[in-house]
Length: 136
Image (cartoon, rainbow, N blue to C red; front, side, top):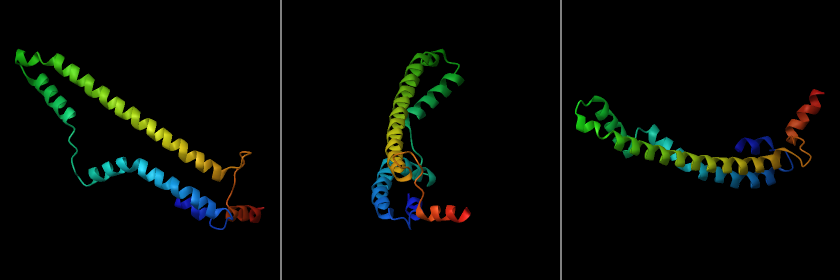
């Protein structure tokens, strides 16, 4: 977003573009904040404990390695819990994808108004228009 402000530095519309893009930049940052915070935590080696995954992996290991027939009776329980966990994460991922899609729609709607005219022609910054004139 700051690159857009720089590109349009000499453009008469620069102030309008900055006023338009600043709230957009804040919207993008706030929408993605949970994801960037999570990434920061992972980068700093904080282990996120997903209890469902831990239980499933331990149960799966137990089922695979155990010779005890009583333990084998846990297979239906494992299958049910596996399906529940998978379904929960699918819902979470689908919801996240919807939010990202909405973010992209808003983001590009605003960018399109800056970068294109109503006739869908590219609206170059003045500095780039000058460069094009000099090239011809």
